[in-house]
Image 1 (cartoon, rainbow, N blue to C red):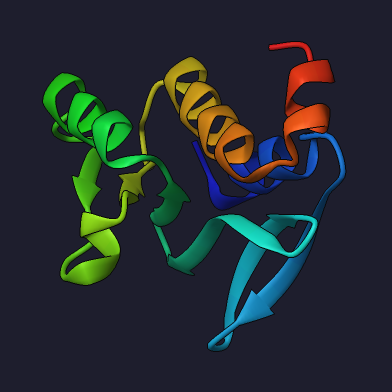
Image 2 (cartoon, rainbow, N blue to C red):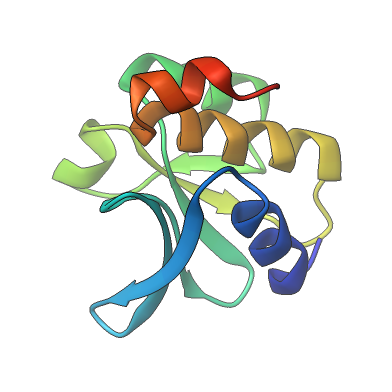
Length: 110
């Protein structure tokens, strides 16, 4: 997977748009961020703490909690270089669903 692959996946989510914060690219639905690209080879996705725990346990080389308080809230590093595209797409979709308006998320096909 490349950064361009992740960008295409993120922007393919319903009503997703690109923006930036702290000088880093991010991807939002409405005003809520579901993914950012803070550095080459690493994305950060918004999971719930339970989803994060499961992802870290099942994909330890792919996922890791962001250090500090953000990680405790579910923000998860996604090390996507060489990662399985289907799994990355699934994690980005989960992050999008976590922040999308309920009506939009319910209407979106998975």
